[in-house]
Image (cartoon, rainbow, N blue to C red; front, side):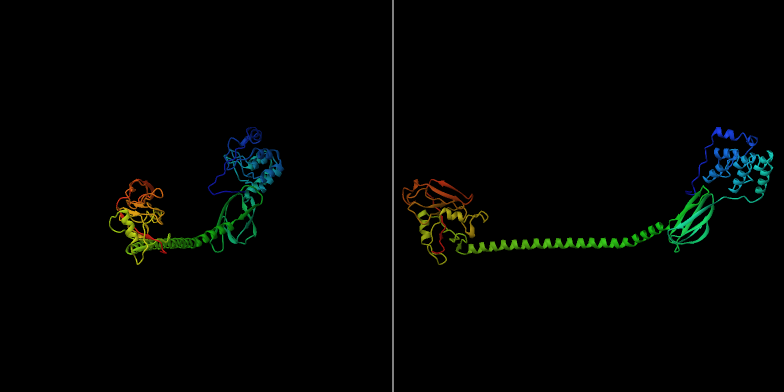
Length: 425
């Protein structure tokens, strides 16, 4: 049995071999010139077995699917050959297998005609009787089972209900047949085209379960699809909401940091304002107390020294000129044009005269110039800058513009005084 579609055509046999066919046709040469073609082509083996009366081979070939009414291109069938050869047993076997005694060649000659022509009266009588009856069509036993409850039809004829796992035996002719089945609810259908080519029991399974399962799965997928889409949309919305929250938190944190930074800047500006407004500023690192302004007019170094020694500021006395190291301690390049911490104003272009304290001897003094420049006598015991010999002294200076020390060989010129004192003085 082959499973085929209705549009499939079975190709004709082409197994006839010239040598065998010539030997077989020696017996039937009387009707070869005037015969008609048949639908199926007979095999050389069947022609030889019918001519020789080989009943076993005839039955074997029929069981293998050989067409009982197959013939040559001229319309010669196995029944005609056996009738002409007077093989009664083969004739009866072919008739029982469904051979049509009424079949004719192109000239209208039947198997009975060839038997009578050879004087085979018994075979002729058998054939004439068979021709007078309805031809026997060979049947094939079909064992049909189903893997799902259904009702089914064979070639459009209802065969009733068939339970899942059950089977039923029916008879069908050789050839093509259509099996159709449907579930009780009509939701699932099954259609199969089969071709029966052999006279033997064939097994057919109505495979509705896979059809049912595929449909149910498709319906479930269709049912779950909007749920999945909704869940995906919910997750996407949650993801976006989380991103929005994180972005909002990030912006809030940036705003908080900016607010803190501005507060710090404002606080620092306020501190500088207060320090500049106040007459004194205490350095939290060194503990020194500084005047926030110079004396306001140019002085000789001796005058600057006297100014600080006689200064009363913020109710405090004990002021002096700072050393270059003390000036370095208040150097802050991030603070305004004067580069001085605590809001100290150095008056830009003015020279600030300084001296190291405590004094180790005469001639120890500093000079601040261009922002603030600090200069000290290079060696202990150099003359006091107020004496006539001070012009030969060497002085160190600290440049507040660059933050570096250097040596200046000249007496300090006129400048202004910036005073400092210790916190415990």
